Amino acid sequence: MNTNRIVKGIAALALIAGVGMAGTACAPADAAPEPASKSVPAKPKAKAETTKVKASTLIKAFEKNELKADKTYKGKTLEVTGVVEKIDTDFMDEDVYILSVAGGGDFEILTVNFRDVPMKQLDKLDTGDKVTVIGDFKDGGDLGVEIDHAHVK
Image (cartoon, rainbow, N blue to C red; front, side):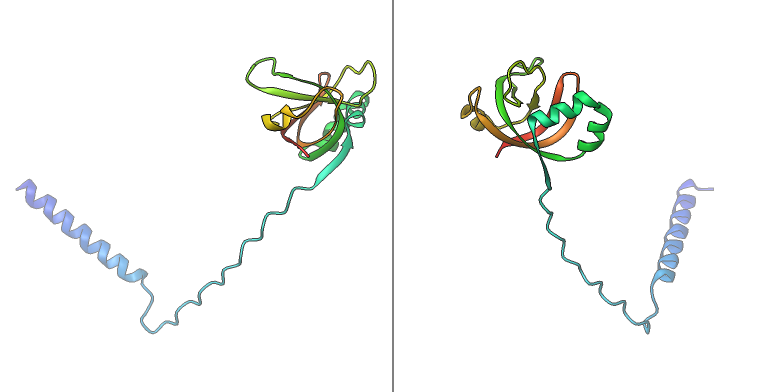
């Protein structure tokens, strides 16, 4: 037997079977057309609500009970008011600057550390300035409170 003839025969059968199956999937000519689905306009994203808190209150919450504070602030955008403790480079990356804010009292050890603050905003701040910063809570604990995606209000 000729192999070429067998391949052509199988291809023809596959083509006929495919056309036959496609014909069964079509709706009958007298069937009513399906109504067009109504498109629902997308709702505009609501601004994320912020939780207002003083830096000193936030730090104390983590000093008292880290688990409770993590549950309270997890997934929230915080608006934190405090006093600039320092603006310094990240320990691991000297091209990244961190804004550290505390309550303004003497001998404070822990701070709220804000990442991703635009350089233009950091340029305008000095140690001792009162500041309000908005950002996404990341973590809190023995080294202070970490907040990402921050900007000065």
